[in-house]
Length: 183
Image 1 (cartoon, rainbow, N blue to C red):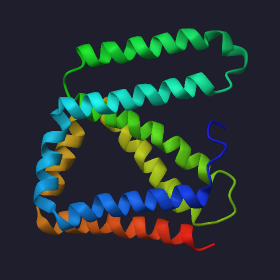
Image 2 (cartoon, rainbow, N blue to C red):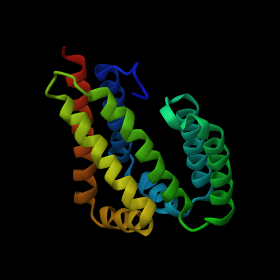
Image 3 (cartoon, one colour):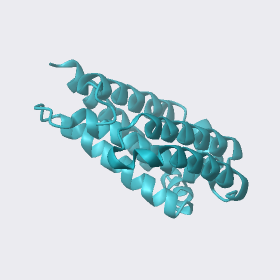
């Protein structure tokens, strides 16, 4: 286990609050959020930010994890991560923000799933479903980053669709948070 200290209730509460805040903001202030989302896929600043977070997170994982018989490769992997991050920053201009966000979602899914691993509560599946959705979106966006741009355009096309999607996110976050608070 990479994150042995995670608690299902705390992780679910944090995830629920994050969903409520993000989707609540999008529900209450649709115009600025849609404008920001429209610019996000080609945002160099967001790409650099997420790429830096991804690199730091990956370095932390490789630095601290038990690699068993591959421990002798740790230093090599650390160098490879730094070099790959630099090369990605330098040569991947097209949709860097989307690709880096996809990697972030893949990294984020693991602690969410690990927090729910072997827990007796059946509501843990709410967290697991969300984590797998993040992982699937992350894989798609890394491999086909233009899909996020198309998804943003699709969801922005009608007020009803935007409202339904943001309200669903608030409700799902509320369910996660409520289940985390009820013991």
